[in-house]
Length: 273
Image 1: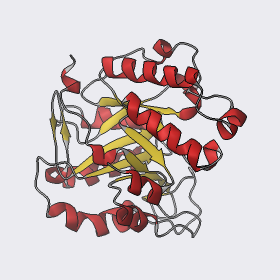
Image 2: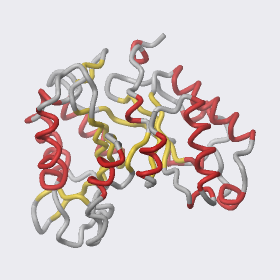
Image 3: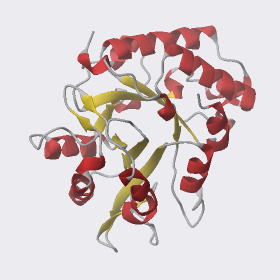
Image 4: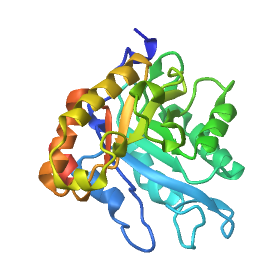
């Protein structure tokens, strides 16, 4: 068995609070909503603001102005809690989603994490859990640049994800995995459309047995390759209502998927094991 699989991913990260940040003057309560729901895995998108000469939180590559920074939105409210927590026990998972591979964004994120090294989970051949674990998603070039920046400076301060090449559907699940997991690249991250590509069918019916079997095969192969598995974004609207959503959540859990991204914070909190 791969040494990367010796530790199970903490169950408290099963549901990820997707897009957990303000956008266009709305949704400013999303982080607090996630916390109230009991979710401790939150995804925050980042890009570069030429106006502020800072990394800011935004779903768009080019911010419009007024977006908060990670310091303002995440670190200020959450860091005091993190500093009260012991090492060796995982608590929070922060997913930083790069919308752009601007060198200043990569450097700023790296330096933010370096300053908080003692709070962070560190990744080598083994995992040394701290109160905060960081996962990098989004722009693949940015993730690769962060890996290169961190390499040689001791254990990695974040883990990166891999995803389907060009995000293209493959008939064979084996085609998704052209490389094993590494001490840095530990997560395989895929959109649910790789299981159910027909959007109309997803919204109008139960999970087909063919998709359920494909999910099991994908999870089995991902784990053989040493990856934790994450899927996105599973909402009621995606599957025509709550019944279809809960069926997909249950299928993902039963297949061994470690992380499920959703905008249904309260429902996910109630379903958290």
